[in-house]
Length: 196
Image 1 (cartoon, rainbow, N blue to C red):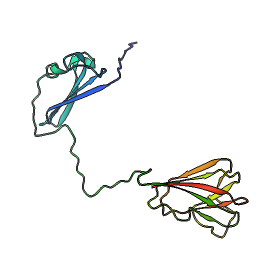
Image 2: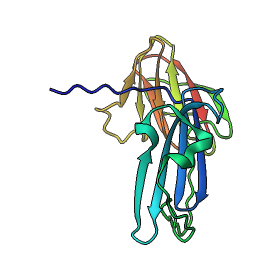
Image 3: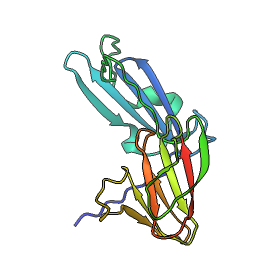
Image 4: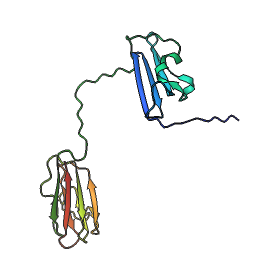
């Protein structure tokens, strides 16, 4: 039975050298203060043969952290530098890509909404424009129910329950979705926090 030990070191510094579009050297060091002339580097060469399109990755000295960055080209057999092909894959994008991250981008708003046990009340009365999310906090001591749509007539399902013991719910909803609440009794006040 053969047992192999692998030495792992935390990488703190990485260097790249692209002398040609088909050759790239990558150096890794476990020291932030290492000099290029010190034998503390793990060096890898990527070489793409432009005639065959095959890319080969080779590590100097079996991947040990004992190479000198300044001597990186001497650890490998000769390679033909060629700028007619590239190690990096070619990527083509057409059209438009637009993204909008969630979270606070423009503003936030707190509001206080008092609900009752007989009608569904919008949370809040008018949503924050371009809202990304809302938090409903119930510190009243009275449980409330939350719905995404106004009462449908059949109130046998009263929505998700938020207990009144300092509980809260978070919803990742836009301003086009209106939330409604109704209390199980009394008229508790809810804290609504929105972000856009």
